[in-house]
Length: 549
Image (tube, rainbow, N blue to C red; front, side):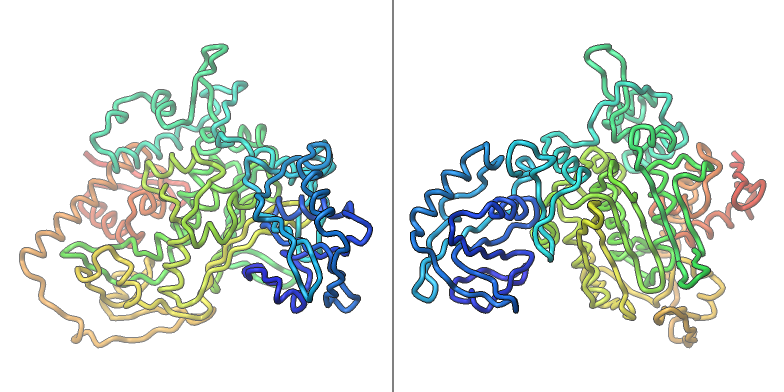
């Protein structure tokens, strides 16, 4: 039976045992393995157990029937309610029935996926020895890591809201706090919190809280992960690891053309700075139509938002206690986002039904405050819808438990397709007000645009096509020129505001924080440098900016 299929007793003989179906002969009464399967289905995605059916050697099913199905059903109901036998009864009356198949009685037990507050569902009295999960090969005994994750997830309180009473404000990175506040100031210019000092601001957003016993203000898990130094984070989360890999090659001399990890020591290594560094790199080569809404250019396309949402989904659902860390891959085929831990709702619910139960709810709240990610539970649904609409191929999402380590993996692949810009238009809030121009990337240079060059991805390579300049030349009305000039000045002021407080930012980081393309930031910076308003001292990577007042 396929995972997505609805079980039908009439079709029983056409099924095979698998991830969602288990049959048992039960000739000698209720088998002990029944409870292992009950636990496994409850702790996975649910499934159906049929008593009175035998699996043949070739995998086909033989309907044997039960001699006294009513007695066996009564025995089952008594035992499923016995806490010495199994930790929880998650079944309703309608989920356990005697049904007839080929004139013989069988018992059908439809086991749902247990709510996370009930997991793990385990056999006996010890979750460490009695918890099971289901995979394609049958029931397996959960590792201690898997049991620990289910126990943490069963709490009604978000794991990242835990107060770290052994730490204080000194473990947080001032530069990261300043970067976050710069974006907050830009998105909430008249907010009362902008007048608070840094420590009070951290309390306002949930990064710190008072320890009621000592009266000391301490970081929360979310505060440490978002704003702490890597070495401080690792002391609390020993398996903490962030990794970005770009264009990895195959073969003996495998390497990355670009890689960022949290352990290099030349940056904070926290989650927020990781997002600021990685999101611009993910978005840098996306094809960006020249989009105007009214007289203003729209650089943040639905595809850019989908990639950003994928990053936010990854970190807000990551189990930072889990092994193997957060890993982001980018290559010519697309993107892969992998994080420790499974989704806390079923994948089908998360993707199709707009269900949301983030593991790190406080981090999600902090990111939503600076307009990174949404809180309506529509993130994954929107990612899948956008990608299918624009690239005509479906993203994939899976959970794995290899070696007893849970991981969730989201893949956004191009499958050789170019973006469908007409389809993309329909994803804007007001598609009729949108004007699309030629397709390019964020990294396109002004010179290449003047020449009408358009670089397009084609599998792993690129190709250049020349457009007739005359066909794209339009006169710009004076009112439009004035509006565009106002937008340029606004962009320049935003850039200067950021660089005044954090002169070490790169142009890519400025672009990410302002939601502007890197090309747009570079144009504005070049203009301000020519006007003498902005000076760069030192190298591209190690230098800093000087704002001339």
